[in-house]
Image 1 (cartoon, rainbow, N blue to C red):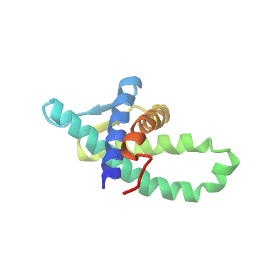
Image 2: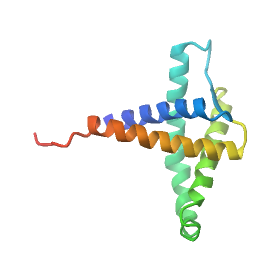
Image 3: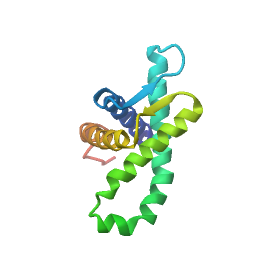
Image 4: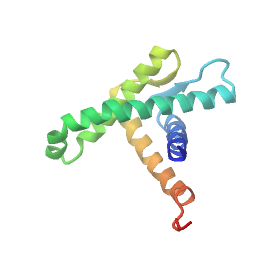
Length: 135
């Protein structure tokens, strides 16, 4: 459970950084645009991103595995951009959340999101998973 919460927080923080760095990706907060509403919106969008990435992303990666091999993994940029656009569509149905201005903004946003989440994960990993696991 702790790993899930940490992963959710990392994705929410990476999503915030992505919306700050990429002008074609933004998050519309629910309600009165207060700090609490904004934080909850980022957490909800990160949760939607995790579910879409876990379910739809896995299916796409399994089906497209030969193309991944053929393109030496470059197809993952396109797939991750598509998943970000799907998250934007799902959050649009809800009525608030992620907004992506186009497919290529989604690809760029997914690339920045992955890099930032990776960097945050490097920093957080020693805190969450200590080296000495003896009890």
